[in-house]
Length: 112
Length: 114
Figure (spheres, rainbow over the protein chains, first blue to last red):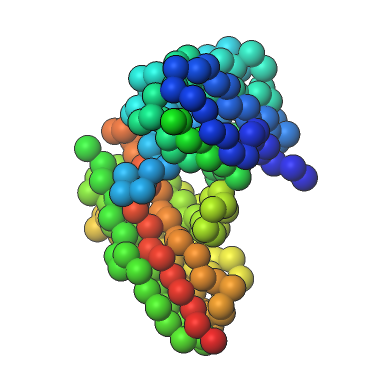
């Protein structure tokens, strides 16, 4: 059982470049989420999707966009990367708000 | 605004000890609380989920309790082992904050030495 797969595992990106972080889940969960984890700030929600075709903004959505064309995939796009977007990004999914959330292994992104 | 606090921030214990990790939250109106484990450089692994109507959940050597009215949860680890060394995170789904968001504590970094 793969669970949640994120790609790439790590990336160094020049400021101003566009980047898409990929996330795929094989659990047929309705809800998917993107978090970033920063030292001293913990985990913060960027965007979420309660079901295919819908998305919503979390705590720190600026500079990021998402789409949910189908149940399994939830890509996160940085339109024009800035150094403050250097972070570890985690994708997560759950069947609904009352069920267990599962996380991917993360993407370590460095913007230089 | 819901805030989640974990105490202690770090803990070092000898192998075999029973230990308790604490998590407190400011708003008792929650859907559920989830405990995670994170190894260095890795993702989060779900340990236990407690619904707001439940008092405790058990999985192997782990037992998590929830006292919603006082805004507290504890994670009890029995007979600790070096392999338990990791950062433990608690997170709540808060009714006021919206069920879409897990609100995390800063974690407790646990080291179990042989």
